[in-house]
Every structure is written in C-alpha cells, then in structure tokens.
Length: 376
Image 1 (cartoon, rainbow, N blue to C red):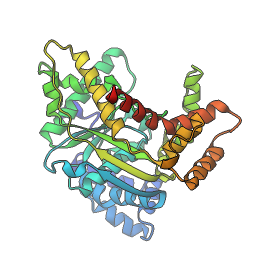
Image 2: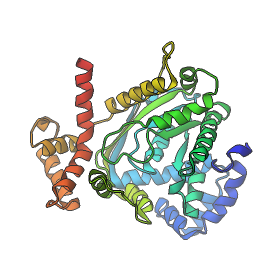
Image 3: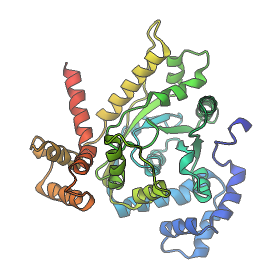
C-alpha cells in the first residue's frame, strides 16, 4: 500500500536489485565475508544473489551470520516459552531492549528454529542514516519509526505506523517486534513507555481499545544477556543524566554500538516468551488508565521472566557491599566481573563505578520489588 512506502521494508520485486548493489558495497561485503569465512568472493556472491526474497536472505545469510556471532561471542543461547506459541499465528512481540540490532536478530533466529512466523521489526530512522545500513535494514524486514518533527507530524507518522503494524499482523499474517521503549535500556531498568502503547492503539479508531489490543496477540518477551557488550558505552549517558546535563551522541556512536553489540562478548543469553496478554477493560475506564494498566502488566511480566545471571547477583552485592546473593555465584564469577569492572571503568570515579554496577544490579532489584509487591 502506497501509504506505507516511506516506512516499509523491501518487497519481493525490490530484493534482487538491492542485493546486486549490496554485493558491491565494501562494508556489506565485509559482513558477507564474516558470515562465510571459508568461501571465495564469487561463491559468496552466488549465495547472496540466489536469494529472491527477504525470507530467502534471512534464512540463507542473516541466520548464518547470527549463528556465527553466537558461536564466537557467547556461551550459548537458551530459550523458553516459544514452544507454547502457535506456528500459524502472527504475534506482536514487545520486549525489553538492550542491543540495537542483536535483540531482534536473536528473537528471529529463535522463531525460525521453532517454525514460528518471523517478525517485521521497528527501527528508529535515526539509526539508518547511512545508505548501506538503510538497505540492510530493509533487507532484514525492518520498518522505520520516524523520529523528530512537529507535534502534528509526530501524530500523523505515529498513526501511519500504527496502521502499518495492524496491516502486517492482520492482512499479511506477519509477526511484528517493537521495543517497550524508545531507545535501549541504559540503566538495566526495563520499563515500558506508555507512548509506545499509545502509538500501537491509534489504529483502534472507534473500536474498544482493550478488544483491539487483544486482537494483536501481544507477547511480552524478556531478553537477558549475562554480559552487555555495550555496557561501558552506556556509562557516559548515565553520568550525564545523573548530572542533569544534556547528552549529545558522537557522530558514529550508534554505528559503533551496533558493531560492539555484535562482536563483543555476551557470555550466556536467555530469551523468554510469555503467553499472549489478555486485557480486560473496566466499565467507564479512560483509555489512558487502560494503557497504564497494560504498561504495568508488561513491566511485571518482562521483569519477572528476566533470567538473572551471576553477573547480576555479583553487581548487586558489590553495589550494596553485601553478600546477600553469594550462593548464586562462584569466586570465579566474582573475580571475572571485578576484572571487567576494573578494565572498563575508572575506579577513581565513584559515580561511574556506581552506574556500571547499577546497570547489572537493577534486574535483581526489580525482582525483589515484584516479590514484595506480590506478598503485600
């Protein structure tokens, strides 16, 4: 549909042209060489150009890339919950967001392995300013979320985006992924921005919002990395926020974060998919109240299902100078994390140390708070 032309990913007719250009681009060629280290340039070109659709490209190239990234930079990916989802149903996956590209890549690799419908994924247009990044994003079924603009422009683009999400889910039977917030979680506190739900609900029109959201089959997803390869890159922004100063990104910061996220050590990774949410609209409840309820439920489910690693428990104990969670990590885990801390943070800067530790400790704190709330 023409109304979505400025935000949609490539259609089947456009893929061949895009790939012919991709195999000539030096940066994309480097990616392909990483994916297929034992193949010649001609062999790689043959594999890439044999792809006739986005689905082909994801299966024959991108899934191989992600598998290699996992093999070289992690101690393995484990999953849970996906086995309970229906292979014929399109879902709206809403997850916490720690890594610009890897989050969606890992989710889609998991969907592929379970025979589930893979996602079209939302990505901020600020991240795809470089032409080759833009082309790669459209070749991997990303659609654009427009940032900036006047309040009226923002409303119009949000409404169009909302209608596109519904179009994909219901007309195309295509699953959709969107992060629970704009931008990655920097401080480890995975919370949902109500604006995300408000945008999604815009397409409801005159339909009851709870009924509409239920029809989208919202699946909360929790992604847990034992080590965040971009942890140190997030500290300057955290320090600026703490000092109430404006943080201005460097020119290549997002691109560097993408590379660091892909190639940096992650150790263990776990992804959990919860059951689709079922929402009940109370009589006389305003839309904003309903959305607040949805936000609270998303936060609770995502934080509850976040898999805690030794790094989280070590960080909590170091931050609070306790041994409360000593049984959850070994001396080796403690020494490894302390070494990472010393290598990445100026130990003479207490605020930097605190920010780094808090980033890893926050999921433990969230689980403690959820437990207290449940027992109250």
